Image: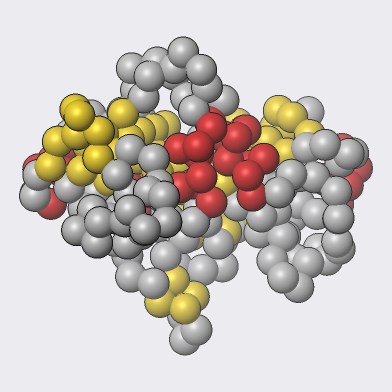
Amino acid sequence: MAGEVKKGWDRNRMAARAAQDLQDGWYVNLGIGIPTLVANYIPEGVNVTLQSENGMLGIGPFPYEGEEDPDLINAGKQTVTALPQTAFFDSAQSFAMIRGGKIAMAILGAMEVSETGDLANWMIPGKLVKGMGGAMDLVAGVKRVVVVMDHANKAGESKVLKECTLPLTGKAVVDRIVTNLGVLDVVPGGLKIVELADGVTEAELRSLTEATIVD
């Protein structure tokens, strides 16, 4: 499916929409890329604790220019800040939290998502090998997985597919997909449209979605 839609949400609006799903008291892991922007849009009155698998619980906002501490980085190697309640620990403790089901939600980027919730987000064979990182542990251990990504690739082809073509991070692990065109939930039989992005019609979203959309 090829095509191009100029309307819809930009990266910040996508992150802000994903942030609306956060609930008070949750421990949340933010993946590399657009998901890191979610930290800027946590709803007022909602207290969440951000976890980074490289050993940080309680991530503060991004530092102002000139105030960066190179020893304080998230899993994407971006400089961050600490809060009074921030805790630091080794990778073994971090992944014990993830594998033990202590993290309520992971918000991750993706290269492809299938209609059954399969996720491919760590490599393109022969082209892009970012390293597996903690993605496989996250999708297996957290209670809810939300993917935030562009709906189509640079060639205008759908990244929301019947079946993923890239190596999988996890099978049937994604609960919700937030793209520049709208919000889709993984349900029995395919994907259900939850919300359309600004100025996007249902027909436009369907035309750029290879996956099955159920009513």
